[in-house]
Length: 601
Image (cartoon, rainbow, N blue to C red; front, side):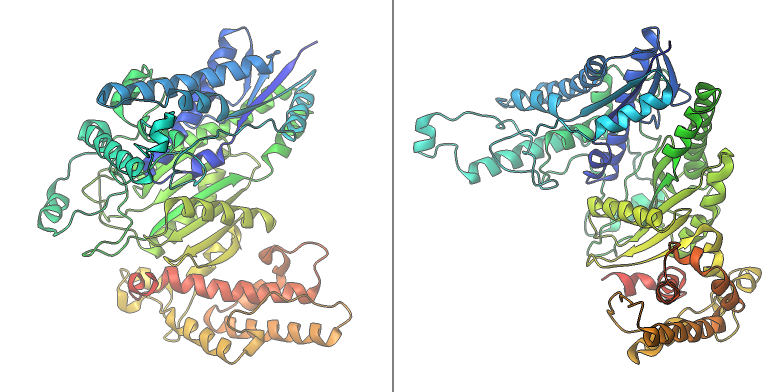
């Protein structure tokens, strides 16, 4: 009788999201793919067979859930994954110690602790694939987690992990404590600043950062500027205070460190992966001479993939079907990198492995023939261009030709919002799309203040934003036919201004900061009033979106993501909210006014 094994490890999303810079996201993705790949190598070298994921030799975007034909113990899986992780930690630690020998290091024990307590491995076995998958899910319900304790200051990112510096883990003598020798916050803070300043110096060069030197107009801008623009890609900033995992995510993107792990940049047989050629960080934050850059972040996940895999596990040929399915998804991910970064040249894909992906839209340049690099990184993309690309994403997703839809969270975010917050917004937006019946996208616009507006729409109706017609009868097809002349671009201020007036008068039940209403099923008068509000609001909407009153009425349940037991009045309320949010999002993304000054709040 055949035996099957399913293995995964955690935390994955938390490991990725605790990132300050674009480089950290890449580093986290490289590490996760590397750990999964080491497990795949072990399986193939020990007489077992990898069923899923497909294309096991492709490390980039390797999923962290491995399905194996054959029996593999949990102890074996732990040994493979943790050994690979400890090797990475050891190389990073020794690289720092060799480059900065002037310090006395006390931190080896803390690095060792992180080696054993960063990951938790989950394991399931069974006589068939379905049984192994079920056993894995059951075992994931019980956690065996141990946290690392420390004495000292915390990372400014997590607030829970210790700052990595040579004095971490030092034991002070009684006399030092009593006389407060080297035992004060000021001393520790100065030591940390001194250490990160030197660390910044040894890593801040073109070879390590893998960033191409500024040329042309970009170089001239730097020379004439009165200040050094803050690039979120200076390898390590002197004022940073990183924990050990954060520091490792940064260092694995450094060529010298990667060589010590046994990797050569550009080597096709690399077992660790590499940053994209000409990798360039984003300049998001505002400076005294330049406004902050708005960027788009998208996070997608295939709908009900787990359920699909379980169905395949019950088929006559489960191994073949699952392998074929995951191979198709991995091929799509591989092609998506090329499509987005080189064909569209809009930004970067952080990962695109199995059924999930994460990427950033931050640059746009008309008629640019070369890939994105330092020469056009200062040409930020506008909201409408980002939206137009987003409208094509669903068709791009279905190129894998598998019966799987996708839910996406898209965040259009101001430059001063920290990256860790942006990733959380992406995750929340994606979850909103999932919770509203899936197969849709949630667009969230996040301002510098941290406030946001959002709108969730099925992919089928996302094009509605370009069906807008202003009071002057300007439409997007006509605007495009006239060479996208700004004078003919539809003016979203018309409908947005009308909405503001309606809200100030509480028309159609609209009001500023109104709360979600619970409708008593016995209150027929209130239900009837809400239905009237919806009808009248649709009449208003039809003025600017001709013909959509009937469409929205007919497909209301699907559009708003309502459940089967949702009452008519509640669906009417959801439709009122949906239309209001559509107008708000449309004005922010599609407006022909200078939104950077309006939104940089």
